Amino acid sequence: MILNWDDIAGERLSANSQPIKLQWPPRPPGRHPDAPPQPATLVIRVEGAFAIELQHMADVLIDRINAHLGWRCVGRLQFKQGPIDRLARAKGKRGILSETQLAAAAPFAEGVADERLRAALTKLGAHVIKNQDVTGRDSSTDQS
Image (cartoon, rainbow, N blue to C red):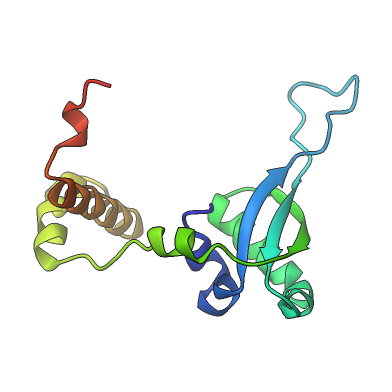
């Protein structure tokens, strides 16, 4: 989720906030093992007075997060005021993919029937290809 914060929160919200951690509530004793887990609290670092604006948008942001994750993972947000780590945000940028990288990744997702899933897998494959181009090595052959 942290890697996709820009996509989840949107450009404006993510520029002034940074997710820190998920805090899960303690399991009540005697709870059935098949019972769904209680939603977590997402702790978010927020710059300055932007916390008030983010607080007003909490319900929308929780819906976006849960939609991204595919289940009701987050039930509430907790804000910690402080500076945003700009260096970590800059490293997290995924960059622009070239047509060559997308074309090279497309055959790997060819058999997927769902168009949106096929597009997402192609994009993921293109990022893997891009990483191989940048590092000059194939991470799948690493012995570590």
